[in-house]
Length: 148
Image (tube, rainbow, N blue to C red; front, side):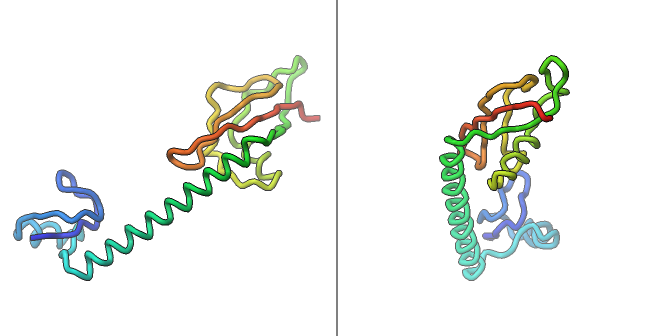
């Protein structure tokens, strides 16, 4: 019997896959636990349409991420942070501070998409990596200055 998985099933497949299983396994385990549904023509068509919509959405997100990386490549973000008497930072520069500085400039970027490879603990200019999408990354110039 052909079924469409509605959730990931260990040793069978992932959500949205069409698999062939025995009638008893489908009737006694998959259907009662809402792990699968029968592979009717309307269900297959529905899955096909949702996969196409998901692919279009991912393509749009990818294009927006590439555009954001190009936009941020020429920008220098200035982050003001408290420092000690000798110019050392209290702690280290974090991604939230960089994200807040970008938001102040009018550029929306989540702090989880900013990657600081090594801790920034002193004033100066640095380059950090941004990853707005899975396989898209770019560079952002950060200027760390003392807050007054």
